[in-house]
Length: 313
Ligand SMILES: [Zn+2]
Image (cartoon, rainbow, N blue to C red; front, top):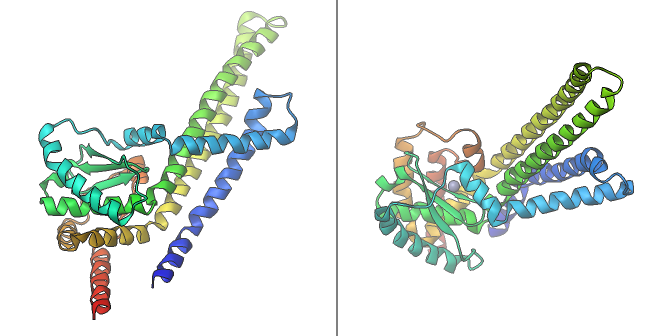
């Protein structure tokens, strides 16, 4: 059974893996053909590809660095807890679950932090490697339910479910930002040069408009390239989420294994009664893990309970 689950886990990651390999190839090729030759024209051509690949590797490192985590929290609206009353209530719950999760998975990072989000929905989310955020809406739940939900989020971090999404989204956000900033600076310089060059042959305004038109068309091409790249990144997110259901079931079981089965089932039952209400949108949603239908999750937890019972007999 364990082996079967492991295989399933690998299988559902194949789509993401293919996307990531293609992504690395696309970024390397764009860097090697569009960016590096303009920045470092004197180097041999093969070195463009080496530098391009190295560049993407550095972007991935930046994405999984504390700086990447900060970008992700900003994009997601996870903020430090400012209300001492909320800290007084949540921190002991968080510490208790953290200790249990750490016993179960000693490899969990040591400095996972708790944040809150001004969101009324009854939920929490994990991001990157060290971020767990509780929505204000979840504060309506009982302490036991909050612990059960926190254990689910620790499950995501323990299984590295959010690592892939971090590399896919934040890695590409950094690549995209670099591309836009580099091209903008490059375009402005080449615009000044082409303006000065045509100034000798044309009048001032003639040269000005010629340069503006060439700047405009090139900027339009860059804009198109950036739009294509963004669409490609969203495809990566979709592929990640397609394999994300198994991650949810596994995080649910993690919470049960930490000893919160009863409270977790209560939480899921309550969630089901509210199903179909508000869900995060856009990038915020893209950065979080998807949750499959609650009834299926309850069924999975019950199935797990039954298996535990059978093992005990
Ligand atoms: Zn989850």
